[in-house]
Image 1 (tube, rainbow, N blue to C red):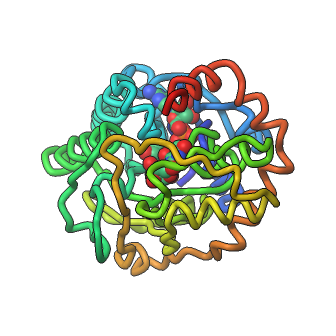
Image 2: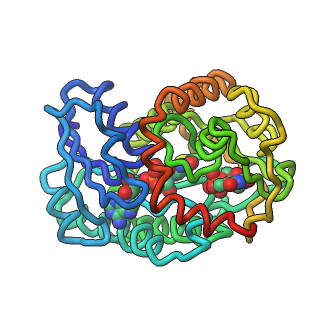
Length: 333
Ligand code: NAD
Ligand code: TYD
């Protein structure tokens, strides 16, 4: 592959992927196509090699724009999405436009242009919650909130596109991802940055019930790259961190690493429709040679250190629109 388009490349996982791919493949050129919503941030791409990287501001819901950006590329990897469950509960219009219509536009553009490979980044949340055991790619999607339903909707459109037109789409379903450059509305960077400021950590529903499987961002990027290069069109690949933790365990870890006490924990009302546990089996991707490398304790230490050392990055974000969102989300909760 010589030239790939990365949609949503100014977000958390997308920007880590751009950096990862430019380092892993010295000949590769990347075009980042991103709408720069509240979660998109050019600071995330500040240190990339400009000679091999081009940025286009655009919306995947605008078919002509995404098609023009994809012309002549060898592959597209789509990270663009409305990505936060709590925001989707406040209103899902943007989630439908990007996660469903946007994905359809990418499939259509790929068909018309003959794009050789289309990698769609999706989520383990499309399966919904599981009490015991782990979902495989053969498990049916049963999304439980507007975010995961919109991601499942995009997937179904894409799989039907493959079935009908042979569009070479590959889907990955990653688990909860953590690491540098994550927008601080998601639980991990929110709690780390709040703890550093001695602000309360708003934990939903006691924190003992809900379980997430934590995947370090570089492991997620390597998994996507593996599926992009070695995956079979029309197939789905789970990417699991193998680090299932209750939210209370995650919270205590953050307090330990920031040197703060449990008095910062504030128990707040639960999220409506809160999925209890996510768990996926990644044997299918492991058969292609991928495995997660980052140990959870080490990954957490690295991540907390990154937020501690990069206040310049998150202090700018935790102003204006963010504070407005925070007030709406947590005030009177
Ligand atoms: P993010 O919110 O940090 O980034 C999303 C990016 O997409 C932003 O840069 C935003 O500006 C851009 N974007 C949004 N709508 C767009 C549009 N219509 N056109 C072009 N660009 C648009 O999200 P993230 O956490 O980096 O997630 C990236 C992808 O990975 C998403 O598809 C998400 O569903 C998936 N995913 C995330 C996680 C996780 O834990 N964060 C886990 C599994 C899968
Ligand atoms: P989040 O980071 O929003 O990811 P997702 O909902 O996609 O898994 O939330 C992770 C877990 O943390 C989830 O169980 C909800 C919980 N949570 C809180 O307890 N408090 C918070 O302020 C947030 C944002 C999440």
